[in-house]
Length: 562
Image (cartoon, rainbow, N blue to C red):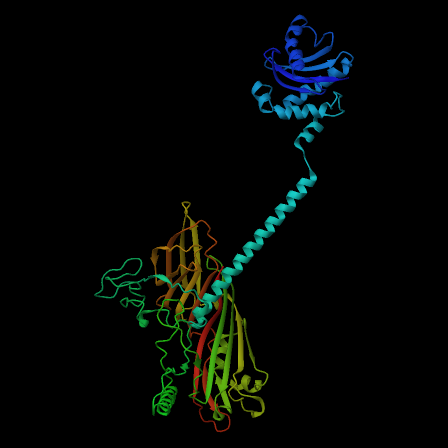
């Protein structure tokens, strides 16, 4: 069989919608053959084919007065032509969905492609089924699917890596800010130059003062005004006593700074006297544990411009024969709802002999008290060189064989460890809610878990996901906003039994509720979880009491809400 053309006609065969030629034919001949079809069909309506002297018309009526027409040579097999016609009649509605003039025009190229699947160039029929035609038209390719899957997997991996890198950068920024909070300004050269702005206060104003707005501006005072938690009147940033962060994270141990040396021109009789005077003043200040010129050079950890970076400090001369540091490091991780997921306390007693008088020492602790209270979950361990039998029997920490402590070298003589949900002195929860209008409402709360704990200089630090300032709805305590890093700090002077809860509510532009995490918490405290006390420090030979400098502190090594 040889099919010259396949066409779809409307208006009782008088209007050609789609026509596909399979042999070389000029346009005039095609139009002439199609124009003659309605006239020939009108003379023989009882047949599905019409013959002329040159060609044969094989046709089949479709819906809506349309016809499917094949023009073949007279030598073509009429039975095969009818089979081809029936196959094309099945393919057309499968491609177009409905047999209408509009559907045919919309899917004209798809119909031509389907005709090409049935008939090859030259007009010969292919041995093919409607399902195979449908598959070929969909152009399904396994290789293409594999390539798309590989591309999607690479994009997903790149997106995960991007999110991991962004999280690492955010963690480094928060760790740097947390270190600045805890160190009180060390490493100030790495901080951005832009300062924290938007100082806000909570609590009622002091008596006799004017009202204050949400930003803590009170009675016409400059930025930074407002009453703090203690109700003291606000002042500007220039007053160090009004800055709740000025001494944040600083140790209770005094530090002596080297005296400033100002270069001057030659002055007769002034060199020797100046050196003697400076050395004399430094010695007097060292004896009294005072810092020479420290007030004007203390570094400001929040970039508020309170003072320039301080000069390098030199260690103070020991004022006592011995130094004892009782320290607990707290590691807490909470859920966003404030549930403690993991909590651990690592405690240490560190003894340092500053002079020969402090080397022969017995450190007595209240072992019977904390031994009775700290049973389940607690573990205590002494240094290998400490006489364990004496410690277990009498609660005295001394070296084996009556040996002296090393001079000017800290020694950890006792360690303890505890893991439990009650290790967290207080909890923090954060509830960000998408308001659906391009803004997020955030509610944060803290709650004291240990009624005996007194926690000072509490700073709750978290990212905002934007450099825009937050709109404070209500706040207990104070806050600061750093636009350069998009960070916010919620500050409380004291959290104790009298101030056991607090809340913060604010709104900020955004749509991602995950940007506020992790929430980092920094604080200072002297309330140990372990009820351990140093009862006495005596000379192991004479039994005389040894003067000492003792420091008790709780350090949040990692305290966060994720």
